[in-house]
Image (tube, rainbow, N blue to C red):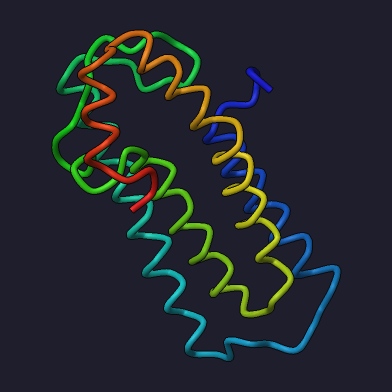
Length: 147
């Protein structure tokens, strides 16, 4: 699993959602033009991830899941969520789901959230606790995992 970085999982989930939508057509639950609200969520999620990436660059720390962090970032979107990039990806995936307009593509959203919550986040939190110790535990006690 170490070779599957979160952006690849995110893009894979989008592909899965589109394939499901095109293979299994079920009655639309979000009709046009209301499904276009999904684009707002897609943009919101992408903007959040870009802001966090810039924050990592500004603080000269590692954004890659499987590399050692150099600094604990606790400001900006990290005041709201310990995992704002994953939150941004999830918001974008929900946007894709709404845009597609049917129920079954939600499988991609659930797949992303499950893998992230069960694998990536626990992996990263172990590294953060080992690297930053009490400082990270204090931060973790104040800020929720997602929102």
